Amino acid sequence: MDVLKIVLTVLFIAVCVALVVIILLQEGKQQGLGSIGGQTMESYWSKNKGRSREGILVKITAALVVVFFVLAAVLNLSVF
Image (cartoon, rainbow, N blue to C red; front, side, top):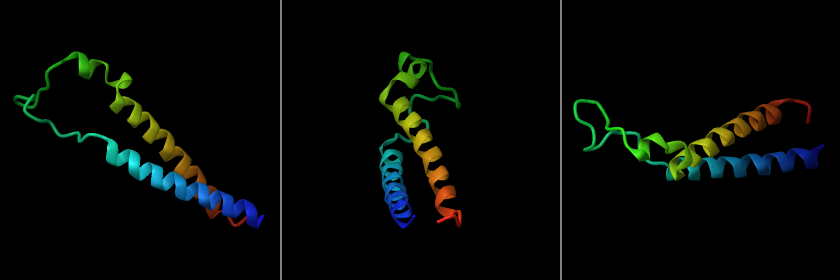
């Protein structure tokens, strides 16, 4: 069981590092010069954001967060 705990801990650290890197790669959510009066303009880029690099990073972030919490819960169990 000690080997399993070591493997899960190494995986947990790898997920933590990957999560930090992915979050730092994302763009800020603040509105720039394209917003007038709090309204943003509809564009091809904003409509297809899910298929863009930013959309992929958001999906990867969500998946890593789920893995992070599952590993944190498993490592916190006193089964080991």
